[in-house]
Length: 99
Image (cartoon, rainbow, N blue to C red; front, side, top):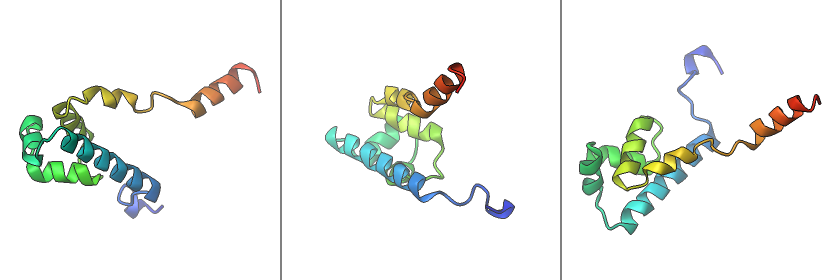
């Protein structure tokens, strides 16, 4: 990746994961029978920002995603990020065993 494109191109797999996360947030909102405006008011953001979150827009700050999760009473879901690290554990175990 060239210097002029660094940070501007989103890998396809990551983009898809953000879209899935947005869809899951949207479903959580709908299950609770909240409108986008309800969540926007609770998260102190605009309705447009909630729409971007639900689309998995990568330009939305992580803090905004956290506030939307909080508005849905799902704030503890953020603690699941990188909680299970099988690769890191495998690397650490290999190092500890001297392999």
